[in-house]
Amino acid sequence: MLAIFWIFFVDVSSFPYTTGCSLTTPQHLTCVNFLPSPEQDFPPNLTTLELKDIQQDDLDLHYMLTKYPEVENVSIYDGNISRIMSPTRDNKVKVLQLVRVGVENIGNKFLRNFPELESLNLQGNHLQRLGDISVPKLKSLFLAGNRWNCSLDLAWVSQLNQSVVKDLKNLTCFGVPYAKRNLLTIAGFTEDLKKQCPSYCSCTLPKVYEKWGSHERLEPVFEVNCSYRSLTQLPLNLPPKSRIIRLEGNEIEDLKPLKHDPVYKKVFDLYLDNNKVRSIEELEGSYFLKHFRVFSLSGNRLTEVPTYALDNALEQNNHMPNALSLFLGGNPWRCDCVFTPVFQEMLQKFAPQIQDLREVKCSYVEGDENSLLPIIELSRSSVCRSPTEYSVQALDLLNGVLASLILLILGKLAYDYYYFKKTGRLPWIVTKMP
Ligand SMILES: *[C@@H]1O[C@H](CO)[C@@H](O)[C@H](O)[C@H]1NC(C)=O
Ligand SMILES: *[C@@H]1O[C@H](CO)[C@@H](O)[C@H](O)[C@H]1NC(C)=O
Ligand SMILES: *[C@@H]1O[C@H](CO)[C@@H](O)[C@H](O)[C@H]1NC(C)=O
Ligand SMILES: *[C@@H]1O[C@H](CO)[C@@H](O)[C@H](O)[C@H]1NC(C)=O
Ligand SMILES: *[C@@H]1O[C@H](CO)[C@@H](O)[C@H](O)[C@H]1NC(C)=O
Ligand SMILES: *[C@@H]1O[C@H](CO)[C@@H](O)[C@H](O)[C@H]1NC(C)=O
Ligand SMILES: *[C@@H]1O[C@H](CO)[C@@H](O)[C@H](O)[C@H]1NC(C)=O
Image 1: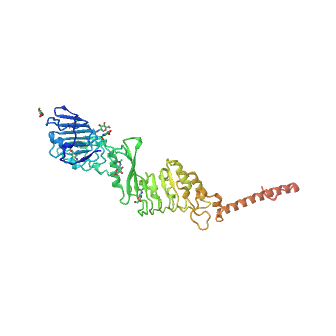
Image 2: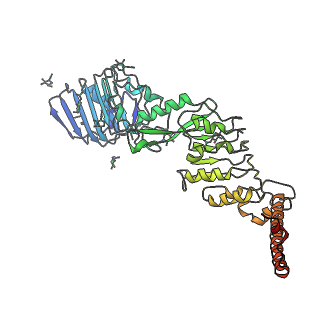
Image 3: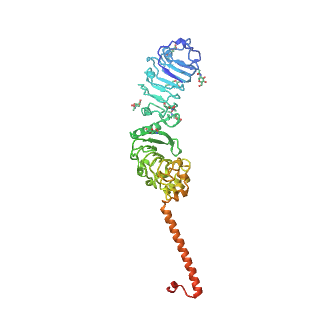
């Protein structure tokens, strides 16, 4: 780790310089592992100072550049230096390379001491973001191989001048959730997101994925959170590529936009917990029902759902069986012999997907034995034998009537046969036939 200090006058004698330096050319000093010792005298007109793999905490650039004032190129590669004492402004350094030395921060406080600086190389360090740096004569800047933190605000990326930052296209994010993704692409996504996010929601980019499996083509996953904003309708001005939408704790009743509005076309996960949704019949045949991944409707006002349509849509959903989650608990479900048996069958069929299966309960009805019981546990007889089920009685009645009619006809047939055998006369009905 390298912290850069801005100390101009340091007691040089406290630094144990040892040998390890040699002139590669008459004006180019190369030091490996060690810095030049104070006793060593190299020509004062050195122009290049190259330091490799220095194993020392402090590097006093002020001292070095006072001793070798003609140096224009300071190149430091590798090593564990933890502090650099910056020079005074009267140096001639045009090229500064701090490569793989663990720089965590760099700013104007340090850089303003290099008024002639034209080229700065900071590759392979631990920088997480770049502050505003102003170096008047800077012509090239190298930044690849750092630990750019793409979870932080990336506004600084759009400030980078493409003709100055020579490896701009090679910069990548470091660490979760966008490891090794192109920094410019991610910064572009977060900028779009910031522009498109409605003021009353918060928008994030939890992840990106590769489109068509190509490393080059990334698709953002935008998450929009508009929970607890007293919304009475599904918001329509959301970022076009919203994939995860949270609308918990609002007052939304109508789900029609989900079927018709293009904003909702790409939604995977929709959280509508604790709203006022009474019906999802509008969603029959919708693209959403066949493509969602999470649909959370717990704590709404649903009494029934179009079971056949829902069953059908779920079967076709490409997130089945493992990725799909449906929440239906906390709704006042109707429990009667018409709806419940079919609904119960659907609950059983999609039990692995319905995450709150046991919370799917009959609504409260005073005096009803099924009141607030989990629907999945109801026996068929308990929903269908209730005296209020007129439809069952009507069916039973019809069955009784049909059975007695059959008996009557069979009886009449037997009687006619007996009558014919005994008297040889045909039944009255036959005599009337042509
Ligand atoms: C650098 O200094 C040395 C003596 O210290 C001298 O011999 C040499 O000519 C100088 N080189 C240049 C390019 O000035
Ligand atoms: C600075 O010195 C380094 C190390 O020798 C060298 O690789 C680099 O090309 C030099 N840069 C310039 C601009 O001369
Ligand atoms: C310098 O870093 C190397 C590898 O990172 C490590 O093995 C070594 O102990 C470090 N030396 C010092 C003095 O910290
Ligand atoms: C980018 O840098 C170039 C060259 O240094 C300069 O001419 C140009 O004005 C800069 N562009 C911006 C937008 O700062
Ligand atoms: C960018 O990365 C590619 C591949 O890793 C490399 O070939 C290229 O030289 C890099 N460009 C710069 C400017 O560093
Ligand atoms: C990015 O910065 C945030 C906030 O400072 C921090 O919590 C997170 O660990 C950082 N991520 C990486 C990969 O360093
Ligand atoms: C969504 O926003 C609400 C209200 O600001 C907050 O309480 C909730 O934690 C957020 N949810 C997520 C998953 O970020």
